[in-house]
Amino acid sequence: MVKRVKRACGHVKGIIEMIEAGRPCLEIAQQLHAVEKAVCQAKRTLIQDHLDHCLEAVVGPLEQEQRRSIDDFKEITKYL
Image (cartoon, rainbow, N blue to C red):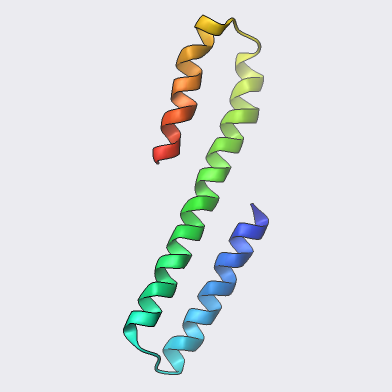
């Protein structure tokens, strides 16, 4: 998680330098898109980690049939 956020931070610093250097808008937009994707992936990782650890701790062990709703919920969060 930290590695992903640091990578995004590095991208942002690079984008600032690109803007200051007057680089073409297309190149800047491509880098902004990369930062956006990196931040979204970090968010997804955080949410999945929370569900995998915190939710599991609260719910505790369940039988397979009872887990279906929780597993479905965890799966659908991948589309956030």
